[in-house]
Image (tube, rainbow, N blue to C red; front, side, top):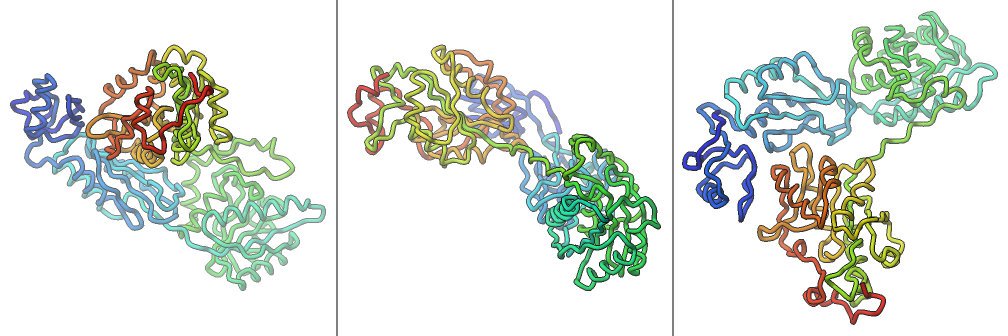
Length: 558
């Protein structure tokens, strides 16, 4: 592949390395230049472009990514469509992802142009989760390099495999000693049931017995008779030796001990066993805690149908220090007594909406455009916010300034968050900055809506939300109508600092769009709603009849 600056006279058929905005169109990175594209570049004052031209035997980025994805993809894994040299691979079912790190390294060492990235080894995935991504770095790669990577990927088993979870039936024997608190026993059952259900299994009614070898053996035999696929023993006290009560109960039930202990903390004192061809575990004391520990790692492999032998357990030592880490943030010293409750889930990432409603409406004088009701009695700002609320954007933040109390009254009890713009008179950018600064940490992007655009529907906003895709490089989404850029605009979080640095009436937003043209996804809309704001009295007459205002009232004045 030749990558250089081409004079326009020699650029036809080359692939653009960077996006270019011309007076009537955008030529995006990756566009194959034709005569019309070259003419548009000339009209924009260009006489040369940085581009790539393929050589004989080169494979285009999307074709190369598709081929490499096919080579590394095993059963129960689906490949998406290629775009910008990337193919994402997703799980067809819930299961455990096992990665052959050595083979993956060999594939990634073929050439810097070909990359395969996966989730960590032994990651638990749900249906539809992304497992891996293939990215071809340049616009094309030499065919022989791609063939080498394909051959390595197909030499033996796939470099990563998805092992589906089996719907195992689990029997739990809970041992007790005189004086044990009921809350401890109940906590063990509750935590175990949560683990089993999370992996798609079912629980037989748990059995309680004395902390004695014969009683444990009898309970285990009963569980086998009831159809248990996996047997668990929760001892009344920690197992300290292969010959302790719990393991002895397994042996007395006709089983055998496979391995005692594991290099994972918490979870060191687990004992892996087998009875009548069924796996059995004597659980360590951390079984009563719902927090991540070695039990989880063993159960995942058993539900995935993978062996839990000495080699598998030894490999768990890398990353096996779970004690008092970010993955297990509650130290043992603070967890005494009542079993710890599950940690609250991390706040789910969202795409938020910011509605700008702080201006003085000077062009509509003497009326305030946002407060003028339509013929149904609904103020314009209420119409705008209702459209936003009908979309998937959450949370919805309304920026107020001039007549803030009246704006809030117009919105009644709608589920929005208000934030004041103390310097709204300095221009639109001040209101925008107030809204961006108020976004929660979980907001991965925000769609900025104008309070005087009541024709923008929730469906249009949802199309912008759907276009946002960091994997594909679609970080900014802009609606267009007949080639004109409109509003609202969706911004990825990485551009929030630039938005916060804007000044004046918001023209800086268009500058940011130009500077990041290759990150812009233009969403063609058949409706001119995305171009129409209503900020003069004359413009109100162009609204659809049902949205036109009745005679403005005194309370509607600016």
